Amino acid sequence: MGSSGINQTDYNHNINVASLASLANPINGITTNTAANAAARTPYLGFQANGLQQNGFDGIYNYNSLQTTVRKSFSRGLSFQAVYTWSKNLSDVGFDAANINRSTDLAQQYGPTPFSRPHRFVVSYQYELPFKANGILNKFVQGWGASGLTTIQSGTPLTLFDNRAGSAYGSPGSGTVEQGMSRAQICPGFTYDQVETSGNVKDRLNNFFNASAFTCGPPAIQPNGSVTTLALCPTCATLFGNTGVGIVRGPHQLNFDFSLIKITRISERQSLQFRAEFFNLFNHAQFAIPAYSQAPNQFVNNGTLFANATAAFGVINQTSVAPRLIQLGLRYQF
Image 1 (cartoon, one colour):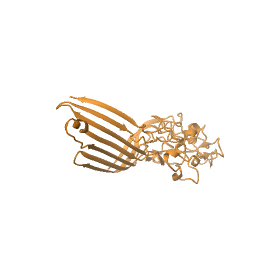
Image 2 (spheres, helix red, strand yellow):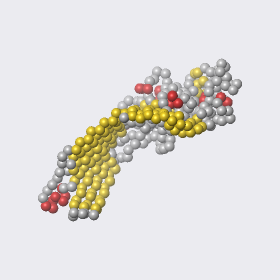
Image 3 (cartoon, rainbow, N blue to C red):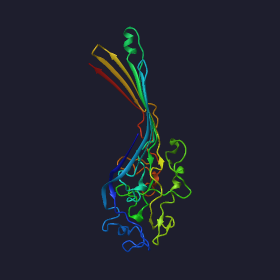
Image 4 (cartoon, rainbow, N blue to C red):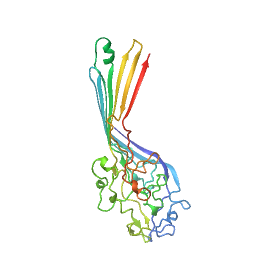
C-alpha cells in the first residue's frame, strides 16, 4: 500500500535566503560573505534573510508500505489478530515548514519524516475463560475474560541540528523551524553509523549520541571566499552543516497492555461487570527521544547541538510511556 502527494502545504516558507557572493559573482556590489551583510545579499532587499515568508503549496511526500494482517478465531472464545507494517515515509515538508538549511532548495530537505516508524507490529487478543462450576460457585468462576494489546515499533528518525550554522545565509539556527534550522556538520573521519553510541538504551541515557562526531562545528567561510574550520576562524560566517534528514533513529517501543474482566449475571436483565486494566503491564521503561521537550518544538530538540543546548545533546530525560498504571472499575448494568 502506498500514496504520493504533491502541492503539500509549506508553512511559513522562507523565500529570501541570502546567496553567497564572490569576486567573480558579486551580489548588489558585495563580494564578501559575513553575517552582518547577509541582508544585502538577499533576493528582496529591504527584508531580512529570514524575514520574508509565504505559505506555499510546493511540498511533496511519498509513502510506501507492506501491510500484513493475520486474524484467527478459535473455539471456546479465543481469538487474536496480528498486524505488521513495514513502511517508508518521505517528505520535504516533514517539519511543517521547509526551512531546514537552504530553504529555497527543497530537494536537500527530502528525507524520512519525524513521525515515520519503519517497523510496527501490533498483536491484540481476547480469551473468554472456559471456567464453570455447579451451584452458587458458578457465580464466582464463570464469566471471566482476558484481553491484551502488545505494540512493538521502531524509533522515530532524528535530524541533528547546530544553531551556529548558516550565518552566512542570514538564517542561522534559531530554535524554531519558522525562522530556519541548520543541520549539524559531521566531522571528517566519521560516518552516520558512528553517530549513535552502542549498547542498551538504559546504558546510554546520558550519551545516546557520539558528541565527538560533531565537535568540529559547521564550516566557516572567510571574507575572501575560502572555506576553513570554525576553530581556525571563530569570527567568520558559517555555512550549513552537511548531515542529512533523519540520519539516526530514536529508542524503539515495546509495550504490553492487559485487561481482566468478570461479568456476573444477576438476572436476565441485570449484570455486574468488574474490570482490571493494566497499562504498561511489565513496567517496562520506554524512552523518549534525546533532549525531548513538549510541543510545538519537540522536533527541534531531537539533537540541537552546542550553543544553547550543548549539555542536552544525546541526553534522554523523559520516557515516552508512563510507568505501570492499574485501573479498576465496577459497573452495574440493567
